[in-house]
Length: 139
Image 1 (spheres, rainbow, N blue to C red):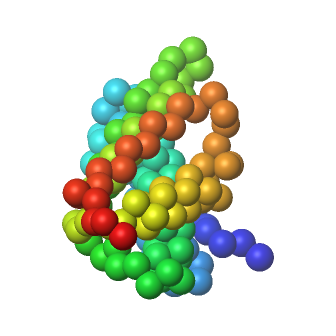
Image 2: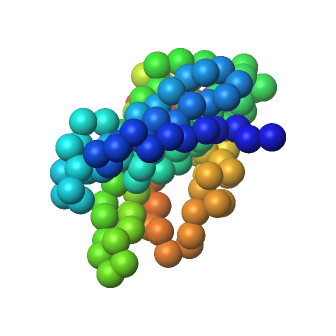
């Protein structure tokens, strides 16, 4: 059974509906590719998907290990490449709101780097990930 239904709305815009929840996402072509840039582009969603997947898998591991990562944020930069036009690099910078032990940091980093999306992307796509840990707590 389908998970998502997407409709072309015209003018380089789509609407994707998550069938289980009814949640909708609009995409627009970016300004540099004949679009209006008024919403996420499909390649923006690719980058966001990687980041969200990493943070979700970290959350699963954190919950199982009784580690609080609430308030963790990330900035994501998508860098396009040409010939053919594609995402050439995704840069993700995590920022954590509190200090963690070195053991917790390693656990969270390893979990982030095992998310299903990262394994689904072509190896030619460069993925640059940094973890902005606050000062480590001595365990």
